[in-house]
Length: 123
Image (tube, rainbow, N blue to C red; front, side, top):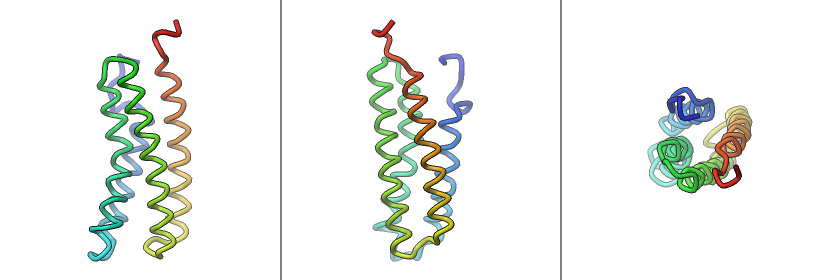
């Protein structure tokens, strides 16, 4: 895996795609919602890719895995914020469902990516 660059990783590409969608949602929020729910929403979504990137740049297995697990936590936090946006009628059902589907796909990619990282002590 070390011969790949970050931008070629599918798990990272999908995280960026979701971040772009989240930015469009955030940008369309009324100003009074951007500071509270909007800022936490965009930070959680962007944190998925940021943690993948930071883990990818780490050398030691335990450092890498810690950041990949943080990315997974941010993914679940992002699901929470999408749910709240939907319940508060700030996004429609189609946006909510498609976003959750994409986050579920990213979760599967992320779990596979974590498993592929492998613990060097297991060899």
